[in-house]
Length: 146
Image (tube, rainbow, N blue to C red):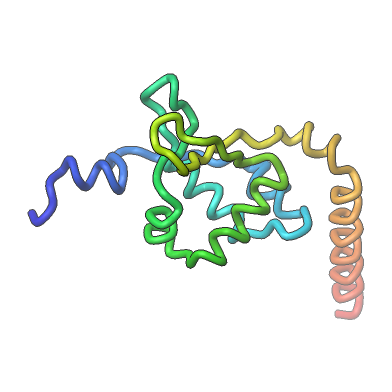
């Protein structure tokens, strides 16, 4: 094999590993302005890169933006714009590295629960159900025409 198991695990994770992303992030946060499935994908990617072994670094992504862009397939502008949305909604924060000067770490935070989201963003929930009602009305009208 061209690359060692250590290299492969370091950069691509353990073969049996997985990253879990909540339904709230995929189904509710996408109701927010500028937050779409691309943004949810970046969140899921960053979550998969979080440090989980060192208690002092728990939840922190220490890789450089350039590394993260190369592996995620996003260019600088696409990465930065999606990251700004994640920061806006409290899903990612940045902290200065205590070790490397002029380097930021990304702190990947857990999303709101379903009920917390509904309480915090009632207008988005109402707007969504308005669209659902319109879809259901059109479907019923189409069915009646048959």
